[in-house]
Length: 89
Ligand SMILES: [Zn+2]
Image (cartoon, rainbow, N blue to C red; front, side):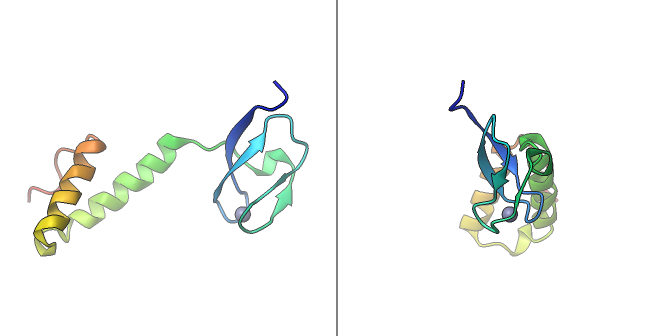
């Protein structure tokens, strides 16, 4: 299992990195922050999805001002994320 990697988030800049499962130290590929694995929490997709859904909900307030193709993309995003309301009003 020595080569297994998992996704972590940088404790400094928050970007997603891959890290060896048995690494004693992890270095962020973007900000070069280097620390122990406890400072690089596991990447959790559902948390990010929650943030993304909040942003899409905010974007919904501008729905009427979007171009037709923008509206179509917005509706596709909502469909993908199971948000079937929010752009109707
Ligand atoms: Zn970083």
